[in-house]
Image 1 (cartoon, rainbow, N blue to C red):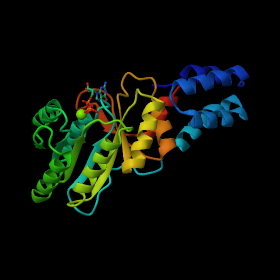
Image 2 (cartoon, protein in one colour):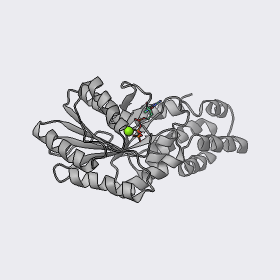
Image 3 (cartoon, rainbow, N blue to C red):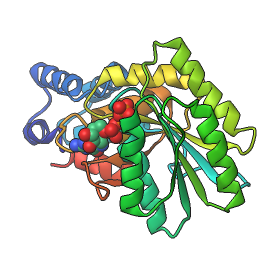
Length: 279
Ligand SMILES: Nc1nc2c(ncn2[C@@H]2O[C@H](COP(=O)(O)OP(=O)(O)OP(=O)(O)O)[C@@H](O)[C@H]2O)c(=O)[nH]1
Ligand SMILES: [Mg+2]
């Protein structure tokens, strides 16, 4: 996914000219790195000779990433509750299943709550995943109050000593106040029984700056603890990960790189930077 390959190769041969800087600026914008990060890179690179240039870009990118832990947060009580939220179609349900599978492979006992009760198909989708990975899924009737579903799931997760409760929620637009209020209610109701340790916003890595704005509004409404960035396969625009971390100071905890269970991993920031800036 190296964004800079061509440019770096060129810059390693000559001093940086005004047209190189322009080319760099365009590249940064195309890569969805965001205006702030792009400006910093340009500023830092102006004063440098070409041999330091790559190092300067790497440093700026690295400094733009969040310093917060990328580990899953835990409360002193079990289960650890992870709420998965975001706008429509970003990959919440798939990521909930992938995360459940990842934790199961670490020998954890995982329960899923199907809190997307708007569409019957949504419950069926997560149930199918549950069967495939051998993880129980708690659901309610069609159109049930999602808060009631998660309340039942939380009680069961405590009673049966699950390590994790993963809550898949319906996609919602950040501009719909009633749907944002519903999310706050889901959190409040779970917290009557057990603290919510993680609120992970699922960001579609192909949506660019729009996704960032959405994450910002969700953060203001419910307070995010981190991100899952999906669809990083087939996208040359991996820069959105850096733009988001820089803007929100929220750590990306996991990334999705395809449609299968295996296309999921903890976010390795060092490797990510290496891939982005390798020659
Ligand atoms: N290529 C690719 N596709 C993905 C990834 N994650 C999810 N998808 C696909 O994106 C589509 C939407 O995924 P879902 O998990 O249903 O998304 P959602 O956010 O739950 O959708 P709603 O519940 O309708 O809001 C599906 O076709 C997934 O297979 C990924 O990392 N890479
Ligand atoms: Mg879904």
